[in-house]
Length: 348
Image (cartoon, rainbow, N blue to C red):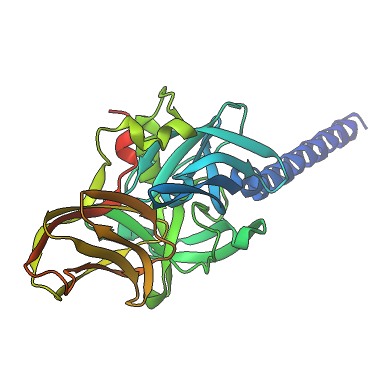
């Protein structure tokens, strides 16, 4: 009897241990399944767009992901020109972001910060694989603020990791939609971040993401950096000149009635600036979308410096004209390019 009693007591202890393990396992699974809901963000942005020599109030939406205490990653094209940024997780918790820590225009990445540092945040895949293509066929779970209607989820897998110039780009087949810019690409169990969505390539039937090791690089670089309040970050008067990724720097001389058309490809929400300096005669200058929609035009009789936010991605044409009423060649020097906001805010 004594031996049986010992056995019964042991079995009860085992049952109790199993119950505890099951509870812990269920809790861990629930926590893992819920990770994306508390660390992914829908973003609402109030800011401005550039229209020649004016600033116009504007608002837009995007996505983000918490990557540090009070720190979120999103796309540069979501963050730039934002003066008030509100993030909301899938439980409805609201975070107010007040500062920008870094803007990487080449990778379309922005790191923004809130004064509230008591936040959850995700682990990042922080080391670049020796061969990033080893990530191919890995299952992924993407989240985005589809159409500004709140967070939506997309399943897929990584189909390639390519190099475009100096940057790595993750290609995946999760069919993300508008508003997903800046949203996270998770590993299937949501224990770490693989990337941040920034666009799509319809011709390749793929969505595009910034690799997490790029995000980690900027997170490390901005550690203990206070950053800039949004209204300071996007104040061009702080710079001696508008910082540009120069796309054009060329002098033109045209006979009366002659026209020069200079094609340029611009990505969505790029802030474009140009200066036209006349060398002789009055000339006309215009920016045209798809050959027919005039975005900006000006009569140039003195140096002109203007900036504007491109309304859509596409092929634009810079047009220089020497009017027929001129009796001699009209010459002008044109400098044009994308505004590099990172030059104004990134830590040196």
